[in-house]
Image 1 (cartoon, helix red, strand yellow):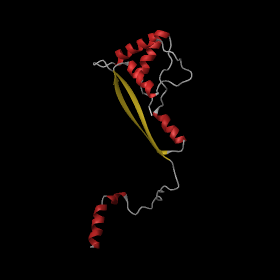
Image 2 (cartoon, helix red, strand yellow):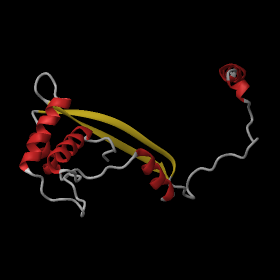
Image 3 (cartoon, rainbow, N blue to C red):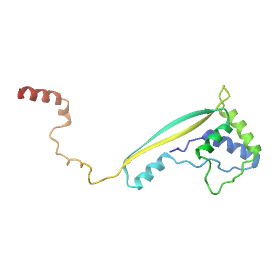
Length: 159
């Protein structure tokens, strides 16, 4: 799933443009979750041995409008009920200029950063192997270094 820092360039540009042009801003990109919230949710759902990996991918677009068209095609426009549905043309043009000025590359493209979370967790089940009782080991950690010697010695004794 997408993480909390996804599309920060676009969100910042839209917010700055709307504050300047309209005196306030409304979210135009769906909210994203934080990594610690994922761990908490999975823990509350009964998972243990949780792992959450984070990757960042940066995709370059010719401009902000091409990025927004791709987001719309992905179904990643804002789904919040309390948002303003209209983004004025003046604000969009200002946001595109801010985006290009703040984040634009030398070749004229603009980056879009996607933070991606991959999660895994386990739920206990009666079919899973149970850990051995504490103190039931037949060899100490200090003897593990000598394990190869012990195995090769026992093979020689068998022959």
